[in-house]
Each structure stands twice: as structure tokens, then as C-alpha cells.
Image (tube, rainbow, N blue to C red; front, top):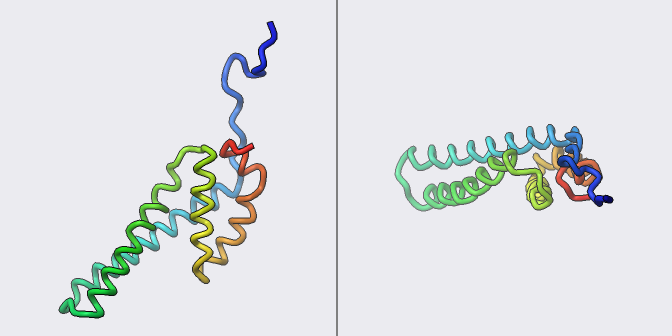
Amino acid sequence: MNDANPYFWGKPPPPETPPVWTWYLVYAVLMALMYVTVLGFALVLTSTGPMRGENLVMAVVLAAVSVPFAIAFGVAPFLPKRPWAWYYHLALIALGMTSACCMLASIPLLIYWLKPETKAFFGRV
């Protein structure tokens, strides 16, 4: 009996964790903390004085931007290692490239993220 699956008695061994994964986790956690801090600034802005004009607009904009990004970066470390998650993480790395401060971390992270071992880790072979 010839079976096409060489791992007939079980699943294939998981690929090794690439070093870029650890750095990505640090990146995602720091970005989530940064956006939570921005949300904190928005809350402080609402509590320090009368809410008129500029202060109200600034607080609403800061909260509207920081909440979705904090959630997006906060859930990133807990996503399954699936091909679609590789694209999700890639989008978060690209999002970091929109800021000059984060670009220093995002560019090297992107270079290593595109390597074959990282794609294999997510099942994109």
C-alpha cells in the first residue's frame, strides 16, 4: 500500500521558529503599548479643562485612531500560524513604516519577514 502522505502516522513536524518572530512580537507589543498611551493622552485631554473646539476634536481623533490600532497590534501575537496571518502581520509591519520613528524598526523587520523560513513558519510554502 503506497500512501502519498509521508507523515502517515501523524502531522509533519512544525517548522522551526524563525528569529524574526521574536522581534516581531516585541514590535507588536511596543506598538500596542504606544497606541494605548495615545489613548491615555486623549483621555487626559478630555479631563483637563473645558471641552471646547480644538480639545474635543483632538481627543476624538486621537481616540478614533488609537483604539483600532491598539486592538490590531494587541491581538497580533495571539493569531494562529496560518497563511492569512502572515499577511496580517505584514500589513502591521507596513503600517509601522508610515511613521518616521517606527521606520527604523519596520524596514529590517520587513526584510527578514519576507524570507522563506518565515513564510514556511506560517505555512506559506
